[in-house]
Structures are given as C-alpha cells and as structure tokens.
Amino acid sequence: MNQGAKIVSESIIGNDFRTVFVAGKAYTVYPPTVHKLAGAISHLSDVQEADNLREVLLSLGESEAYSKALSWLIAGDESLSEELGKGTYEENVNALDEALSMIDSKVFLKAVSLARNVSLLAAKPRL
Image (cartoon, rainbow, N blue to C red; front, side):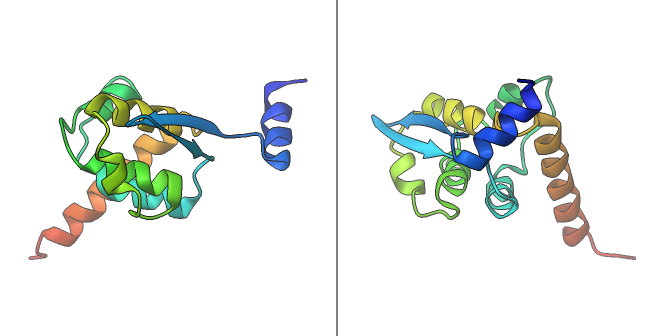
C-alpha cells in the first residue's frame, strides 16, 4: 500500500495519533484541526526562522508558550497548559515536535509566518 493510502486509511479508522509524555504523564495527540493549529500558532508566532522544525521551536527559549501551544494541540484550548507547564522545557519541545510532525512542516512554518505578518499589520499604524 502506498504512503498516501496508508495515511487516509489510518485517518478513517482513527489510528492516526501520537502519544507524547510530559511530566510523567502520557497525552494522546491527534492530527491538528485548523482550530487547534490556529490556537497553537498564536502562542508560537514569535519563533525565528531556522533549518528545521525543532530549531524553530527552540528559538523561543524557555517559555510558557510551549505548554500553551501543546495544550491547544492536545485539548483544543489552554486547559492543560498549567499541567503541561510542570514538565521540562525539553519535554514540551519534544512533545510539540512530535505533535507537529503529523502535518507538513512547510505548512506549519507558513502558518507561523502568516500569523507574524498579521500581527505586524495590526500593530503598525497606517500613514
């Protein structure tokens, strides 16, 4: 079976998920919807450009943005951010990297770039 057919069939039967571990607890992450992705990106829009997704995520430094973004990808809101914030910096970055690996990184980077551009447009007064 080719990779595309495998992805579609796993999606239909619900086998397309990842399990991530933060602060000794396991969380199931399903491929992000537009709603979940938008929520996560709103916390990650300050990332810098880099060669790969992991370096992009690490560009924020130690930040609570990771736990908030991860909460969006798991629960679709910030309800888990405090709990996820108890995990280490590395655990949160690894979990985000794993969760975002379910989408094409180019799509994610483009979405982050668009969020950054929109925030700049909203913040700059028009002359």
